[in-house]
Amino acid sequence: MPTSSTQNLAAFAMLTALACTPAAAAEPPGYTLARQGDMHDFDFLGGAWTTVQRRLKARNTGSRDWEEFPAILCLTQYLDGIANVDELHMPTLGRRGLTLRAFDTQKRQWSIYWVSSPSGRLDPIPVVGGFQGGRGEFYGEDKDGDKPVKVRFIWESLDRDHARWAQAFSYDDKTWETNWTAEFTRADPARLCDQGRPRRS
Figure 1 (tube, rainbow, N blue to C red):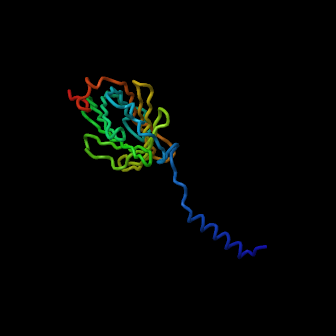
Figure 2: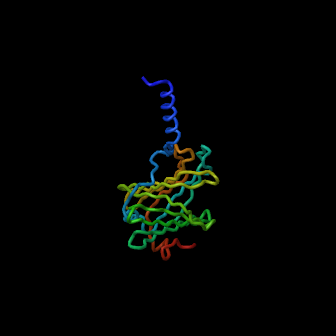
Figure 3: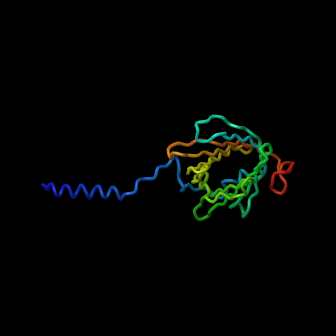
């Protein structure tokens, strides 16, 4: 039988090994940076859309108070579909936003970047992912103020003329809080867009 000295050494070695083993990173449900898609995932979004936007007034507070406002989106494809740019015009807020999406043909994965008109800054870290069927999921990391968050975009192509988008943040690496949604209805690009951008009223 092993001596107490041998047992102590074995226990010490086991504790040392456990201490040196990195703990698995906490991740909210579904979070992955490995999700893949297809270069035609966003073909459905080309053209013009009217949208109803709903945004949570206060994030990470348990609030259920939403603001609702209209917006117009115009999207143009580039490079045979592996890149696209849309501009979102929010007239009642006096704001615009621009989304750049690029498809990595080797990783088979989309990267989605955002620029808002108030800051003019491109978010340096994209959400990445792709579609399976009519549903796309995209994940990444960002900061909400000074708080690190994990980010989730969900895109749904509901039918030819309707789509849905939702953004959620995870502050605790356990749960998601949806803080922005949009319902899309297809519209006439000749009426709403000018050279791929929402017309200025």
